[in-house]
Length: 116
Length: 115
Image 1: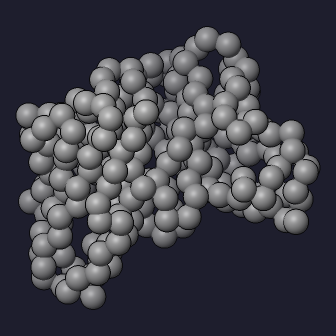
Image 2: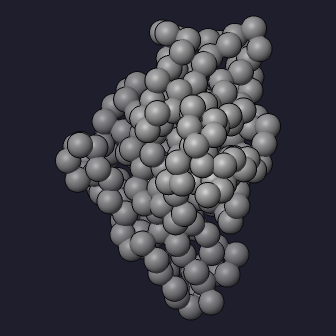
Image 3: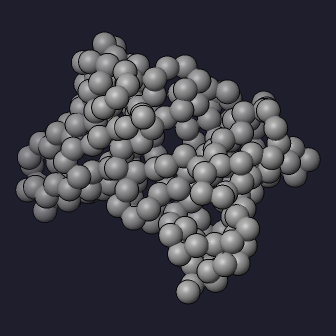
């Protein structure tokens, strides 16, 4: 079965400093992995996705994530945080792999706080 | 492109009433729509998957007689919470996909409060 684990429930950074949101996955196959962002009382916006092409995936708003099979990780990073990045971030895996139109399995979420 | 509209965004109603939530794909045809439930400070849990013209597939533990899903057209799916009770209060989010291996596009959610 596919699953993802987000290692931090809250991450707090200062504006202008790097962001690291950690995610580990468990999958019997080569997984399809996603990062979504949710602002308060809003739906979800896709930041980026990995589908077995390049291991370093670039997304919107300056975010990127690196797929590391040896570490079963898919951490989300951004070089410099903006106040507008404050939101809830979800690491997601699709089941079955490769079919993002089917079932998405969400991690527990990481709330990113950005201090002025 | 790929805009999903959910209506209403917020609804408050009395216990025992039924509430209908609409999910529309505004600029694409959605062969598959999904309904999620999110409790405060928690992740999204898939409730059911619906394909246009077919019966919805419910996840384990979700009462299909309680949460009625209709996907009568390629641009509209509805979720009806029947005989709602305070424990049904939650944030309900829909998503829609154009087809196999196409990403899900999410609505802005509906906050349901049952008094």
